[in-house]
Length: 261
Image (cartoon, rainbow, N blue to C red; front, side, top):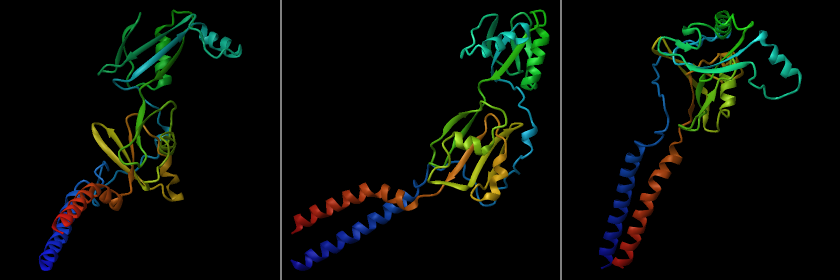
């Protein structure tokens, strides 16, 4: 009887180790599955574009813009600014909200279909002022509302949408606006993914040393993806994956041991 119990216990231990081994193999297929945009060791990254600080943003198809048009060369803006009023009333001017179509054209009142794509914001403002010249010295303000970047700061696949409210926002500033590099983020592996002429350009920056400060000055563009690669957590995720299975097996073996004894 004692030999039988010993045999059963040995079989139970072997079964336990076998199941744990199978669970390890199965869980290894799901560990760190939240890491995105993986590249192999032979992948050739594009050289960071550090000259983009001198480039003005150009309006593009599907941009969502607002146009503020004032008369009198914008005298009303100065009047209400100097009066200390926080919000500018819409007297004497009007707001237009438009989306540029696939050809970069918007249909504006009075002047009709107007192509704005390819123009910088100052160029678009001057162009529209020339079109509304009959309206008592017009003053035009154009803003692009849909310029934004996606920032993943190293916490797996969690990220945020960061609006580009200003021109010439750097990679470092965009990461700061997104909450900064998280504890799990690898500052040595920061990827910038940008679509240019229909092709994805991928840049990799090393922000882990002071030498990376120059590449961190790279100016982001609307639609960019900034991805801080997370550090793999093999042990934590493995234990988390197999813990319920080990608990179930242990409970079953204890019950079997009680029954056999």
